[in-house]
Length: 232
Image (cartoon, rainbow, N blue to C red; front, side, top):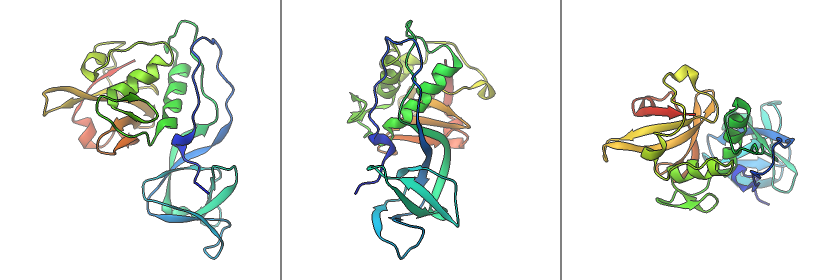
């Protein structure tokens, strides 16, 4: 039995539709802070369904109870992990995602937010420099381009080119879910990395350091000091 991983949710955006799909919320996104088994009940003596590695993402389906969290498995069943081994992230995981407008725009805050939420479905996709396959291997600018392309917005291929397109955001406090972030790469002396802002200080990106699509906290100095542009 395999753990229901967020990146195993394979859903399609249909750019031709003008309405938003009604979504079914599965739970909250969680990240395992230390390796732990998933148990069949709230007891370490119960059957072990699966052993989760550190930093894996899981779907948390309920609030902590008696120091346990309930998680969703791939077959629709539930398992339990010690609450102390999981960090609950402020993002919902759903079975359906927003549809693009007929004009292919992500101009509204609602559509940008839905796009940001949808991007979480690809957490775990491997990082591949120059890659364009959002399920099997992609780099940072390819990831952003592919997601925006799903809603009819055709961005340039490289991060440096993308950073010149769209409405400029000049203050951190003005960032909204779905905005694009661009980071300076000292080695190449130009903008060399990009991601999508999720809200609450987090962003998602295809990261060489994480070996794939992952989330990070923008408030960390290592990101703030190289953030040079944001676009909407």
